[in-house]
Image 1 (spheres, rainbow, N blue to C red):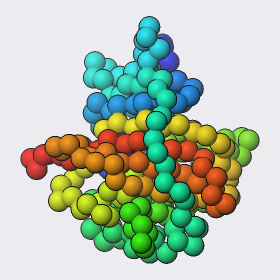
Image 2 (tube, helix red, strand yellow; image 1 turned 90 degrees about the vertical axis):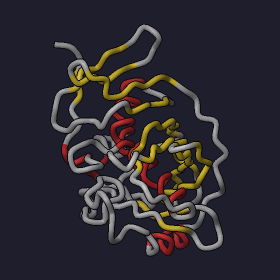
Image 3 (cartoon, one colour; image 1 turned 30 degrees about the vertical axis):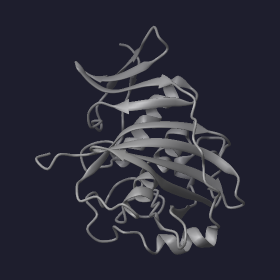
Image 4 (cartoon, rainbow, N blue to C red; image 1 turned 135 degrees about the horizontal axis):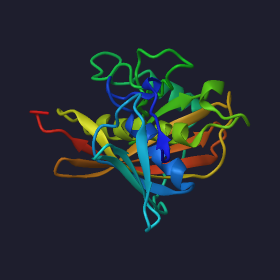
Length: 238
């Protein structure tokens, strides 16, 4: 039997598939560095997915014959805005737009129905006077490895949903959107119990594709990770 991974039900986005950022992070961890990961279908939960390592240095996740995701090593070029303060992030989180009406209220990252320590509860809202969304985040030990630092796939997850709210808070979409691609770079470790903040901002749109940036900062303003996301607004029939 070859190399396999399983996405636990804890890490859902929609009820029956993996959170996009977490799933991208699982692929990126297989590559061991900065990467771009494209999701080709909703990642299934609690099922062994085959890891296929390609000759070009890329990696695929497959569910039988179905391609779930593919990743390639890739550097991130992104202009990251200066951080907001932790107090500003806490205030912005009170304006989280989906406290009610969330399409996936138990999303691992931004689900308001998840309790602290189970989900990440990064509930990003618009920052007063700036075109960014932000929220505080203090990682729990459950999201860290034996050395007490946040697992790479958790950091990728934390970069996911804030990018959407950095767009949605200022350019509301009437359609349901799912993460299609994430390119990220982890710059410095984040430790369990360390207060941090997540930020997201709009980068543009093209048809049903929405581009956004995101970043994780320490409470003191040190950039820990950044990402560029591509979201796909689903057609109404889907």
